[in-house]
Each structure stands twice: as C-alpha cells, then as structure tokens.
Amino acid sequence: MIVVTGATGNVGRPLTQALTKAGEQVTAVSRHAAAVPDGVRHVAADLAEPAGLTPALDGAKALFLLLSGDLHAPGARPADIIGLAEASGVRRIVLLSSQGVATRPLGPSRVAMRALEDALRESGLDWAVLRPGGFASNALAWAESVRTQRAVAAPFGDVGVPVVDPADIAEVAAACLLDDRHTGGVYELTGPEVITPRQQAEAIAAALGSPVRFHELTRDEAKAAMTRFVPAELADDTLDIIAAPNPAELRISQDVERVLGRAPRPFNDWVARNIAAFR
Image (cartoon, rainbow, N blue to C red; front, side, top):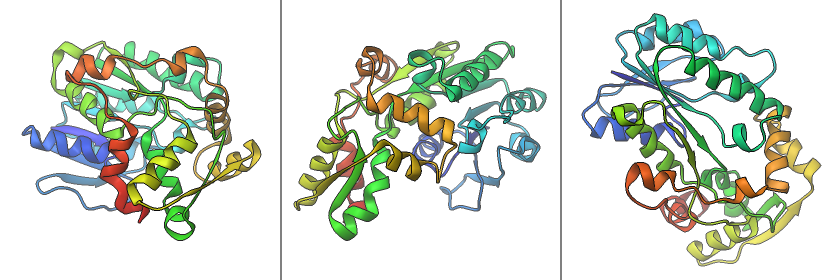
C-alpha cells in the first residue's frame, strides 16, 4: 500500500490515479474530507500534526510526501514525518522538494527543505527527491478573474521560467514509488520551454477564443496575495526567483524525459486540459 499526502491537489490527484491504474492499493491523505477514486482509502490528517498520520501509514510500504504550506514556516518540524513513517514500517519515501534547494540554497524556506532532504537521506529508507520549478497549475490563481473579467494580474509579466505540468510531476513520482531504479535519484523537473506570465495569459486567451487583458502587479501586491496562502518566507523566496531567474532556473531539465521516456508537456497542453476552469 502506498500513502499519498496532498492527495486532492494538482500533483496528488493524478498521482493517486496513476498508482491505482498500476494496480496499487492507495491511501489518499488530505486535510479535509474529499472524494477519491473508487477503491482508494481516504484519511483526513493535518501534516502539521504528524501523529495524525499514524492510521494512514498502517501497513504502508511507501509514502509520497508533499508539505502543506504551514510546514514551510519557521518552527515547523516536517522531519518528524520521516521518523513516524520509518517507525510505521514504511520503506520508501518520495519527497516533493523544490528546485530552489539547488538554485537558491540560502533562501529561508530552501534551507528548511534542504534539511528535510538531508534527514531523508540519513534515514536509512529508500528515497527519491523531486525538485520541480514553477507549476503550470499556478495559473489557476487567475481562473476567477479570467471567468469574470477576462483579466490576469501577475508580477513580472515579461520574465519567464520553464513551468512544469503537475501531471508530469505525478508520473515521475509514480515511477519513483514503483521502480527501484530510481532509488537515490534527485530529479529536477521543468517544462520544455521558458514562458512568461503574459504569454501564459495569451495561451489561455487562445484556448478560450476570447481576449484576456494582462495587468502587471507590483512585488508588494503579489506578496500580499501570496501570503494569504503561504508563509511570508516562502512568498519572498518564490518572488525572488520569478523576478530574476538565474541561469540554473532558466535551464530546461531533461529529467522528465529520462524518467518517462518522453518530453515534458508544454503549458499549452496544460491549458487545453484545464480550460473549463477559465470559462
């Protein structure tokens, strides 16, 4: 049995589906009650209280670990989850980390994530680490404004990064959970092209067949919006990257293709599959 945390999110949902399709028993963990695919067990648990994971981990052989936003905050102890998993008999953990661990190692949230990666390496468990860059699904933050105003508001409109499709992250995670060849792997996951927020808005407009206006936010405006959902340290670290990505953050990684045997999906593909959210 494999436990998937964040199972109702943009990565966890397709990962749960992929593992179920592969014939695995899956326990889906999310903070609140949620619908899951037929045959999947659901456990409501808050990762900020690791003991609540104990029922989910009973009988598990592997864990996909995706941290909730509050576990990036100062004082959080996400490494406790690794200890709990090991004590429960889990033998493999695949951690969803961040590209910034390598490209911005001194950012406060990156220091904490590096410490979690190190704790996983030192645990004695089988492990793999996924380090995605920006998610294509971050564009869902614009869904309401596109539906109601045909407008997108974002900072740094003409600065791009190679955003990755969460479905690609999920497929790589499934491979790492199921295939021993990926044990000890550290995979940087990006999309196939650098794309700016303005270009993303244009892609949404093209899929809708309707113009979408772009409004550029200041950094302060963007941070105020982000800190409604994530700690200020994580918001600052993220804004540092999207304001001025360094050469490593602009590089197109080959790791998706190495693991899956195909190129990563472009942003347009993500838009086509999710256009209903913007209509």
